[in-house]
Length: 477
Image 1 (spheres, rainbow, N blue to C red):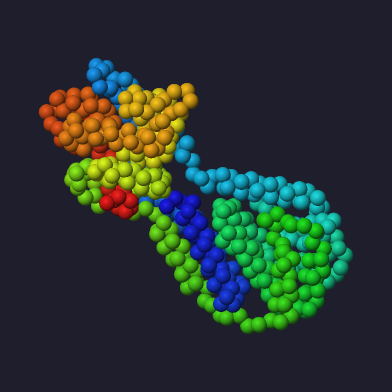
Image 2: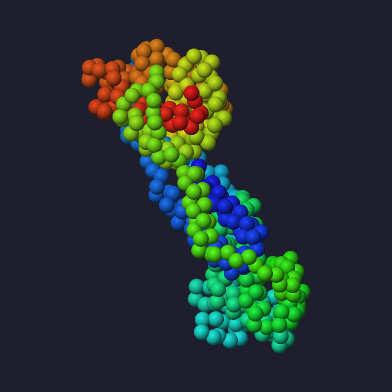
């Protein structure tokens, strides 16, 4: 599971906790403390999860490779694989980046609105680090800025003695409990969970709790009836939505606030510290459940060799973004698996596209040096040999059905040539001539020994390890 999806799970846990605290009628001040502990825990839990998992522990090989065609004395291509890795990662940008960028743009627009709103106010008085400013219209609100704490009061509020006193007390109470500062954190979480309804509901619920906690504190020091009148008059003067970080209540909340002031009911006592610990524990468990298993038990098969090198490679793969993103393409894995079963070939060969492309249907621009394309990363010469059409109008290497048929025929031919799936995989990557040369030079047909002697790249070992990953994920048998 990607960090983005883990974050959405954490947001859902926080939203459920906020809902449960509301249903339990916990004191509003306690709800604030518990939810703020959860907000602080979210980045810490994500950081701990990213440090715990071996993210990026494996990437496709970056050494120089040479590819031979049958019957040709010199390599067709000798090139580094590094451009392929970088460009393929660029082509495989996460789907959630678009809504996240839109949400970030919305947040930037929101901040511009906040700046414009402040520019339309005039300073009245500064006391310590709190500056009181006047606006010509709107409703009172509190705002935290890095250089000062701000209270904005509209002209009508200032002209009424009761409204002015109550509004000042209310906004100062927000600053005492750092509500405007925390509002920035909740706004950031809303942006990060742009597609998650739980994130938006949570931000609104936290704002409700902040307002109700503030009202409960103020009601202990003044007449609840006169204070409720001030809230109603302020709501009637509301001219439009304020920026998210400007802490002011929505009109829909006023009725509940007035009802609480005029009809107070006892709140259930909840010890905040154990509740904080429980919430942080739930967040940590959610993050842990969403992180990949750091090791894989690789079992030998007709393709997978029982070797320490294979197990070591498999142990580094689960945290690799290349592998994690490839495992999300379950429909493509299933399609390749079905073809393998129909042809009586080992299902472990479904790991070839996982290593080659991360099961992404890549364009030639992903690796312009070697000009490979598709799930199976065919070079043009091999593709045309196995019946794929490549011209100015069509590139059948990116036709998943046709390229899969060609790739499986190629693998079957290579297995017929070497009678060993490990050597067939190495030949798929380097060509038969390179594999026969390595065998002749080192006097062994053991693919693991040839990889350890650096006579062959680690490609065959990578595919074996990736097959172990697919087995562990239940995607192949």
